[in-house]
Length: 552
Ligand SMILES: C[C@H](N)C(=O)N[C@@H](CCCCN)C(=O)O
Image 1: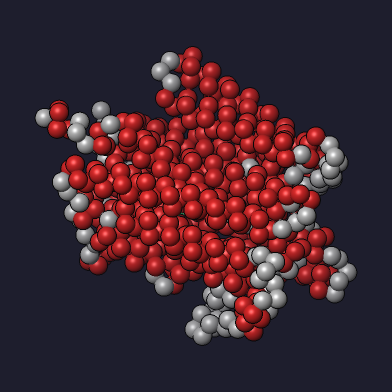
Image 2: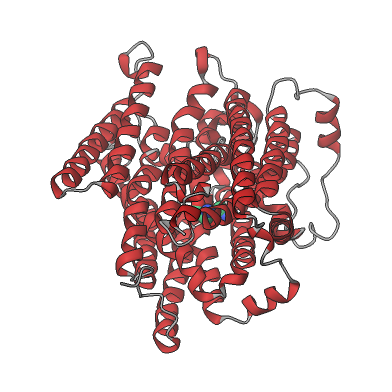
């Protein structure tokens, strides 16, 4: 019996974790591309003429096909019918195709091309969608932003498909083993991707002293090629596993439309799905504007371009320190002795302080914001472990929502008070970003492992597809809304920009972000109310959300 169990690939811890590394690294690359333009919003405005509405519409287009053409629901069906390895490769190809289109749209070669002319004159109106104000294009949107939106829509189909596929892949390889830790680790690596893109995207855009935003996107495209290679390697490992087990597990529970009905009749599922859309709408769309929000609210003293702090060597040193923070915090999860655990945590904290100091010395918003996903890298697996052994997932959702509200209100009302105070502003920004990072660990670490408690295990794939679909509605709407609210609440700035009183460069860093931030805090408020309702429903119906995943 023992001999038979040890014959399969997933029974080897090394093989299992290697497979996880392949999947997680593919997601790391995908998350880099997802936010590749976020830290260079100002450059998109100054070099490509994308105002906040154009930027927000383009960023929001990522989820358009998933939401309105129900691609995510089809992705769930494809996943259940065709299996994890086929869908993984398909999602990798779709991401790469979309990203390549997105890259071409922001290159110099696109400017003045036939496609540029065509997109300038067309796609100004999508019948049906336009009347509802939900079109991913609008009259006057720069052609490069429209074509980039087409690419980003396709990429969005691939990346969300990859998200549910990777979750199911992890279940396939880790079920009955360290599944929560594996999921937490995968999310941690994805967060490291976001931190990496915050640091490297502006570096590539400004490489060699001349600005070219397409270089950053090209960097993202190359990484997506690497992601595809990871999925191809995974394909062979997964095929070998199926050959060993003699089963095609992914086909055991085929997707049926009636499954959707079963999921939809679960109140707990809806509360979690709604909480998910509200919470994530206040995080991911914010991430796309956060760097610009800091540029607009903090006073940066220009760093001498010839100084040590302006060199790319510092970027690389800072990135290495970031890796030390992440690795030390992550490794502390596995340390056998208390001394080792606290030693690693102390190393993580000291490295984090050095990282923050370097961010301050570099006087750049993107390196300051890079600390946000970093904290999540370190503590998401720790919190996942906590949920596994101690439970309290619903309480963690509530605490995460409270922290979210506090952070957005601090950005809206307290940070602007420090304008002109270079050190005070950066300190408030760092503390708030770190607290937001803690919130972004509490919620994902407790939300995703709660889903299996709410629906039958046979329909978990469809449940993830449905929850992603609901969440994507918010991820589509809110980047767009933030952009629109920004332009509407800064009428003087928009008028001055139009009449040439201020340059696009000046305009790009002069927005007042109060209104969008209050809007995001309200989302947190709604998530908090749902969190309390969920806690009450959990208590009444005994959903088990506060119980540990691993029962002793
Ligand atoms: C954006 C995406 N739909 C999402 O929700 N991502 C989650 C992770 C979901 C679990 C993936 N294996 C996130 O917190 O990044």
